[in-house]
Image (cartoon, rainbow, N blue to C red; front, side, top):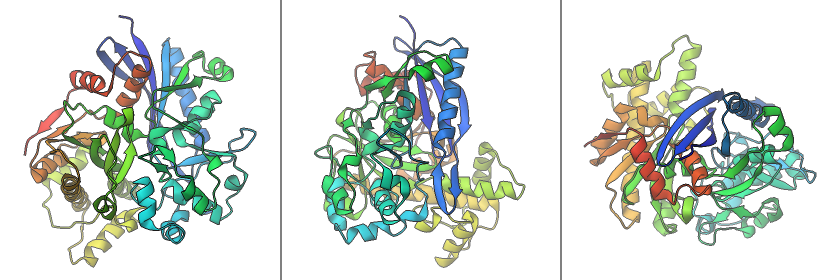
Length: 472
């Protein structure tokens, strides 16, 4: 069978990559082509994404494909959720997209709830209340008379904005839009009433499309500039967690997943959203998945805590490899120091180590005093949070959770996997670490008619990638 080549642009909140997926029948392999940074830019008190820098890096990935003589079948883009850019009536991109860590949304949910009650917002959207959700970003942009908002004809969520730059076609992919807290998970349509309540026109949003839809081809100029030719761009599951969950090597539906990276997203895959009093009170979220599924999950601040500590230590001249970090945590005694990773004060503090120490002291714990103790504190805090979330999940779903699949970069952390298996008392299956890019590529293969459904995709993943199982 002829090999088919799919290019995944997998963009995270700190870095991005272009990855080539190669499918030959049921045999699948991946190859990283380029890697590039993705840093939040602060300018005059506002925080932005450098969308033009990302576009430049994507072009370099296309050039690398051309250089290697790869004949691409298609291209797909996945990113983090909630953020978006503004586009004018003439198609001009209006400045840089605001980043979800911009403090302009601090306090915004409470102000919106004065216009539409909190329980109604949740009842209409099923989305975890987080101050950076797109609904509150739009409210805050209107409140501060943000110029791109004032001039905008449309908004494009991050994967859609990047695909627009590649194709000159505007779309709104379902899984990415589902993170916005504007989409109704039952009707699978935008809730115009929420936008109208905050003084925002529903016309800003494009019609929804499903994952697997062909958006268009690379523009003539881009095809020529990069040497790659007129390649189709496919709307994959644009939200990175949706792509990652697609690549969980599960054999049945009785599993939970933990997509572990800067964020930890922990949940289950179900057929219908959960919009109960309990899910509302526990602030769980219902996001869109492939094939009409719902990802019922909790957003947990993940390795962001560690990433920020590492930056502080690097500035002070202490650099640790990831394996070295795990080793330090393993040989360090648990002092009992623990924080709630989702404490709002940990979202973007000036000093992560000082904030963690302060919260520990506030709660009567001896704060970490060494780098190793900070690492151990973060690991212990994450595992405790995972246990709480799985306990909540089991109370709200109708099937038993028989396994936890850890995917993403955090799946390579053997210590956390062992700690989690012990704490949950169920097997933990770690891997694949590149689940997001795998899901991106295989969704393109599904769009090309080469893979039947998500379970066939998962069978390919299970047969292709080595995973490690940790028993309780």
